[in-house]
Image 1: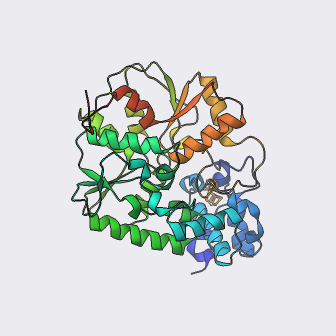
Image 2: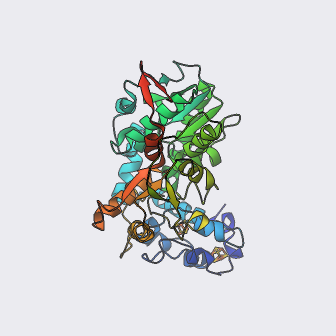
Image 3: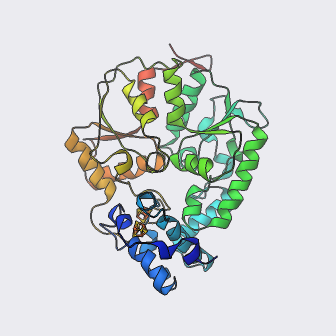
Length: 382
Ligand code: SF4
Ligand code: SF4
């Protein structure tokens, strides 16, 4: 099926709601409405020469806003697919794809080091060390990045303190493929999906929880995991707090504003659980960005943008975001996505605002209020 038919290009009204909602269109030549038009009128050959195809963060705002239910963000991914097929992709993208194929993660880190973060925690290694009711899928970035590894440690300790029976895949875990698909490598994505899906089923778990909204999104919407509940960690932790299995008791006098990750909020409707967790912490004052929930300003970390800078000029969205947080009087921007955390922390450096604001994952904030204690290698809630 050609693109014209596959994406119903003839049905596009050219209303421009897609470009109007695009978070990168103000600083990039990317104009998704025009791409829809030109693909219809002239085909894709000329479009494939446009470097701005790599500016898209695949945030999906265009698709969610389209009054004709068209999928402009999927057309863009398909155009990237044509570039991948013909080998015409930026080198950092090619490197990330090759590294994922060889090592199971886009940074090319050694597979045997994937579970180093869990050393000494005594977590079950599935499937051999099973059975277990649940699987914690850690994800590539939190497995290897020292800035993010404490999120995986905190989350594991919280789940154990709440009495959950779970394990990790350890060195058998491979990239979820969410970003791989969005960089246009559908074939590699399918391989990862099949391999991961087989691993999940061999663990015989009834639920999977992810650190990252990106893993959560693809497991929930692009894998076929019948009989396995897929959760983002904010959904699980909110449930545990609501059931009284985690008790945030220690007051934190902090002004916190929550940044909705696109792949959690806008794309999957998970807006309330992260706010409920923060709201359960005594003393914490929860603020709201004017652009939040469905109207979130994307941090520009998705869709392969962790590897490719993009052609846009001017102030980055993440830099606008940290400025907005300061204007609100926030001391901390909380988020629930490893990519958001890294892009926003980078923005603190590039704007010179380090020391005036902190970027924290929700698990980092919550663990301070839970004051988990470790006794005999086991966590408990005091
Ligand atoms: S929002 Fe939909 S109908 Fe309107 S221009 Fe964009 S793709 Fe076309
Ligand atoms: S997915 Fe997001 S960044 Fe990409 S074209 Fe659509 S609105 Fe713009």
